[in-house]
Amino acid sequence: MRRPYIAGNWKMNPSYREAKNLVSGLLDRCAGDLAADVGVFPPFPFLYSVVRLLADSPVVVGAQNLHWEREGAYTGEVSAHMLVDLGCTAVIVGHSERRTFFGETNQQVNNKVRAALEAGLGVILCVGEKLEEREKGLTSAVVCDQLERGLDDLGPDQLKRVTIAYEPVWAIGTGRVATPDQAQEVHAAIRSLAAERYGDASDLRILYGGSVKPENAAGLLSMPDIDGALVGGASLDLSSFTRIVDAALQRARQ
Ligand code: PGA
Image (cartoon, rainbow, N blue to C red; front, side, top):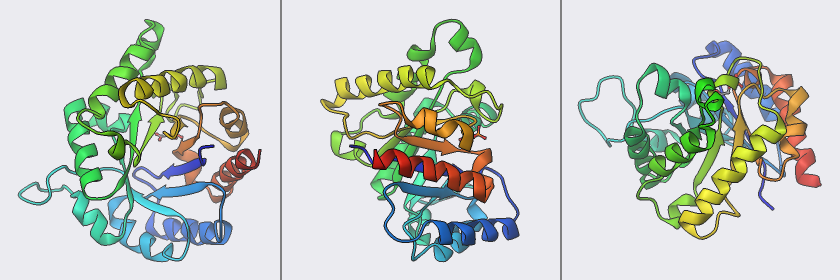
């Protein structure tokens, strides 16, 4: 049985003060042995503080992006080793907002995944189709292509530290969530592609992301291949986020 994983992607939010409040709430709610993994992915400037505030908790702290080079003249960029130095243990790679707004290519995504894994970080690799691609029946082709290229050159041992997040672009920040069946269909396709490539993908965790809220989390998490959620907007509200975590704990008990 795969351990559920709820990850909060804060994006370019919130204020530092709000971030500290959110973290102190999480500290109360996520103490001790949890039956699910919980992670937060704050903006770069907050990472140092958030890592320290959550040091005695099981909550994973990760970054939202990285550069694949170790160091050098790359103004504005942050390397995997810098993140490790700070105490981060994970990073999100290939989020659709980075692909869309910053022109991130599958090759760059793959460079980032490899650099993160080499530095010892866990990776959440995001894939997902745009609305027009879904309407043309291209969902599976697009997602599988992003997956193949994102994971290029990785062996089965490296895959163990990779979590996939299926995030249909049309569902991100829109309030228009994929139905559990729509998401399950793509999650099953992702797992079978990974099984084909690596022989076995029964341990691979595949999160769903895109307008996950407390109201729809349990339905999504009840599907056999949905192992958790990458939560944007709702991760900024302590009560919403912890209710989503509760849904994961509930699923872990079943
Ligand atoms: P959302 O974002 O939950 O606000 O839709 C999810 C994501 O982009 O990771």
